[in-house]
Length: 368
Image (cartoon, rainbow, N blue to C red; front, side, top):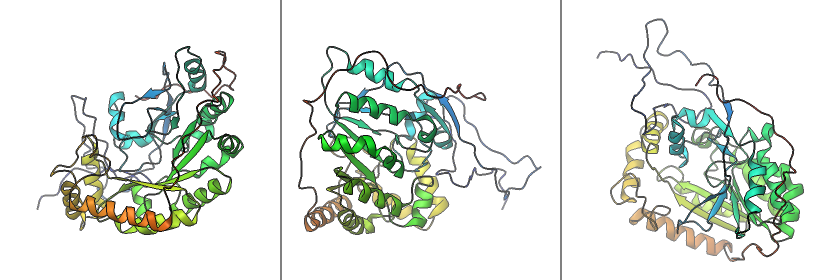
């Protein structure tokens, strides 16, 4: 058999082996061995590059009936956690970048986020409702340590007494307990921690730069002990990979003090299908066909169904079994009983002048 000259892009600590161009690009790129190297040679570490996103607004709105909020803030574009299954990956194509390796290694932060938020909240027609931090990418990914964008946003939200929800899979959220605890005490905050699996080996390939699963469960305990209403998100459930852990994760969440648990069936929009199928072939080749077969059974015979009412939970026998198992375990553990809304009546419109600290400035990628 003739040996292929194509060399796969396999970087340690990264979620995908692909850097295929996005759907809007007219040209494709392929890696080739030029004869000077070894096809089995290990590639050097892929360096994370960070640039600025000079956004004109910071609150994004949606009208989706599938999610319980209509607005969110994402301090960062791209996410270094590198979760191969991330539904936000296709959004990097809007920047002319790859939803693959570019999504997890070419990141943008929004230096004016807090000032923009202050301006938007001060508009006369603004109507207060819960803002979700991390609706697309994680607000506590590693670059938050340096840029502090999430911290600055929280300062504005607490100053204005604005109801807030946070979704993360990082233990870094514990850093901001000095703001989060008083917000929770005032009925202005709830948090959700995403835990996909308790299997450290699986997590290391599925979500290579996120906190270890046990560390995230400790974060649930810390938040709950501090009086913050905390939810565990089992997202996504991947057929034949982590669905067997459903009951165990729910039980551990209850023991850790979570008030609620929710789940989402794996979603594979746009470029994500190819990325995920490549990941299956690389990490679990013997299960790859079975996993994709179950996914298609749950998506009306397709890799993905984006229809409202279907995209989060799926349909068919497998999806129904997951739903039944989930409901029975939730009931047994006494979860999801509280449905109180965050308080919107305390909101105080801010002054338009920014009071937040300046952030470090970094130019856009020099090599793009």
